[in-house]
Length: 495
Image (cartoon, rainbow, N blue to C red; front, side, top):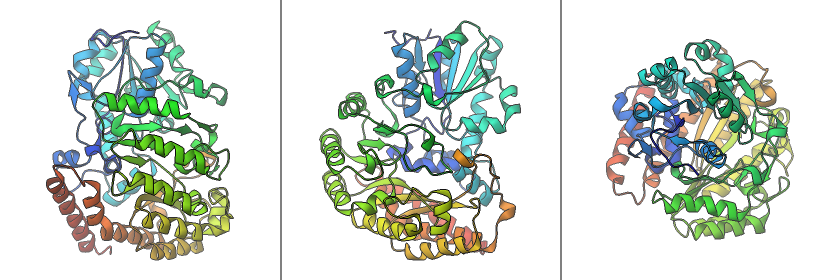
């Protein structure tokens, strides 16, 4: 297997907002979705996306998706090196191909569009992505023949920015799971062949478990995938279009070891669309497999978090959640996960996400949310929740139901973020929700979410940095930020 060297022909990177460990608290990364504001940019970036530590320009950790591509290219014998965007100049002179990982390159994602509406500016993540492509070292390398290949969850946004693709000389954009296609595209790039401008990996090109390589180097915040795909079938989500696959314990533990043995460790963040469904073949959690997984993982880590789980899975198995909580809380006082509430209306749930409530009926969704959120609160699982604003076929009654739900959740320890509807998945041909369509009910919902967050923020800040030596200092910065937000909101007459 080739060794890292400055003469590597393939470089991999991501912009500054993605090449950060967010003070080893992955949910702090949501701050990248906000635009510049009343806090000086240098201070805001340090608070929410400080640059990852490097050694000779090589990051100690990198985004998980980038690590998967790196591992695949290494397994195929390519000379590949992942570098920090700040240190590209040091390595790019010999590069023939530059791979760039993206999540929300133009700020068109739901969180970014919502923040942009509130503050009327372009989000940081879009600014830093553009700055990366516009950097002198990349512009000069393009003149020498550098081929640029882009991949990641945010590639769908390039379909809305064709002039950007042309202006910055992006040669190929890869959508979907790329393990089985990245090698042939990179090989073609190295050989000077014509590349497809937008390559969408088909379902047949989705890798099997055996074809997905283990990461070879550490992932940011110890992220480790335990499965891919989702069986819920929500119409607004693209992940549901992928086949469901669960990794065996051995594969998961090997990747945990990659992070731990590097010395870059802060626990493990398990990643799947619904952690509670690990090992299951449908929407009913498999108690034995989930408990066994957590028993194994907790022995190898200092702490643990989840990327996502569903409220229906939690509500369906309260005793299982309690058992998992008991295992996780052996080493920490709480853990977090991202949760999709999306709506408080059973009727709207039936239209756009009928299986999200399963094994319950879609019209029971509001009660599923109340039950699931209450169980999370009792078991010290702190959710960062999303609500969809402006979904297709949304009515005033749907909005009123969601507002009522927010009132019922006010005593649940959580963050709840309203997101403008963005056409994705089976709803990709629907219209975007625009700020000009905001009604008084939409505004009322946004205000309730904001007040909910401000109510819980001090406790959440304290919990987020428990045990860190710099806890007092950084907690004070976040608390001041929250107080200023609260002041400005009240001054604007929004609350």
